[in-house]
Image 1: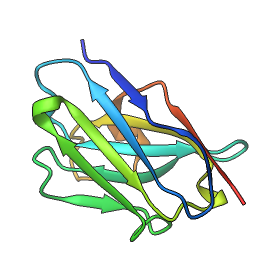
Image 2: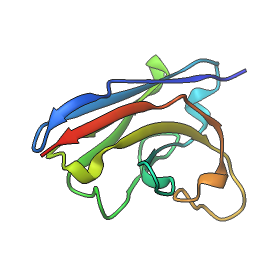
Image 3: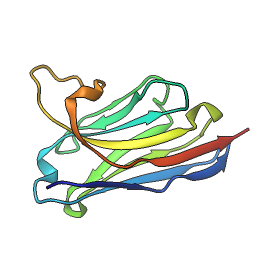
Length: 126
């Protein structure tokens, strides 16, 4: 049974940085790609970033490219999201999730993830 737990959210001002962490239980964490999604009030859940099982490949939404960095430490069963130059538009609940293979690789598709964390709130003020 795999469980994911996000942490690191908070209230910051525009231009500040935060690092989110997602700690996973289970022995097979390193065998799965992982992703970050976010959801703002009244909006659809959107893809933020993903990382391959080895950490060798990363993927980003255009809205965060150049500002956010996803990484992982498989020895610690943890995936990170470093968020720099935060904007008010980044305000959302951020979720990490475990990716499962479904044919073609579509990291931006939420339905390709089978286990989700509880989410951590990120609020960016102007």
